Every structure is written in C-alpha cells, then in structure tokens.
Image (cartoon, rainbow, N blue to C red; front, side):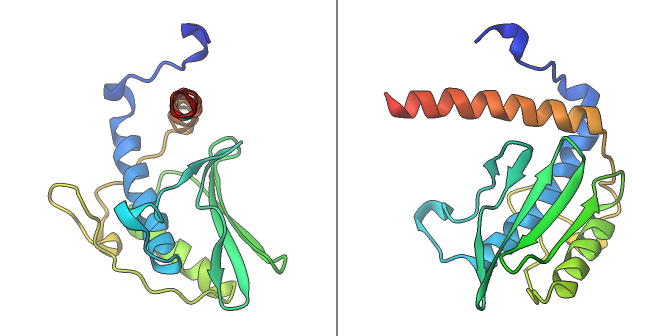
Length: 163
C-alpha cells in the first residue's frame, strides 16, 4: 500500500459534511440498534465498510430482513428488503431533520414500522434529529474520499487483527 492510495481528507475542508454525515449515520445506527439484539460493547450497532460505502448488514423485521447502505459512489441511501422491495434516497445537501423524515417515511412505505429514540448520543449539545436544521451539508467528493479512507483503514485494521 502506498501513500498515494490514501485520499486527501483535510478536516477543515469537509468538517460540515463530516458533522452532517455523523448525524445521518446516527439515524441509521439507531435503526440498527432497535432491530438487532444487544451485544456487549454495543457491537450490534456499527456500520460496516462495503464495496460502495457503509452498510448495516442484514437486520430482522418480522418474517423479512432488510439492510441500509450509504452508497458514496452514486450518493444514495439504499434500503433493501429480502422480499425484493427496495428504495433509494439521494444523498444531497439537506438537514438532518429532512434526512430523518425521509428515511423514516421510506421505511414505512416498505412496511417497516420502526420507532427510534431521536436524540443523538456522545456529541456535545445534541439536537433531536427532527429538530436539527443546523447540520445540512453534503459534499459528494468529500463523502467519497471519506469512504475511500475508511476502506484503507478497514484493510489495515483487519490485517492487524489477523496477526
């Protein structure tokens, strides 16, 4: 692995997108928290690096399973169900409140009625998702760079874990 393979990701240049993505991933993470059995150290809630972004992996819902994936190549949020139902939401500059409303509506349209606690955690001065109009940035180029950096980090950490 060469340094050239790591994308340039200067925090000052994407901090607003980073803050928004942090809240968007908390929305999806809380859905995962609600739908999966608690595992020690909260190991049931992380998002995993995928070939296109970040995914929840499969989560149960009644007699189906579903997953949610942030696609940082086509800049979509995909919600896919085991019965073939799916929906795609554009990742674009929008508030956390709008993202939260759109995701929850899309879940309901897919027959997935899920209620989550809408308060973000482990952040200073949290704002409920439905009231967060402060975080509303999405720079597609930097979201893609972030994902590419995560791909490299995932590779390093898995290699380290294997030794």
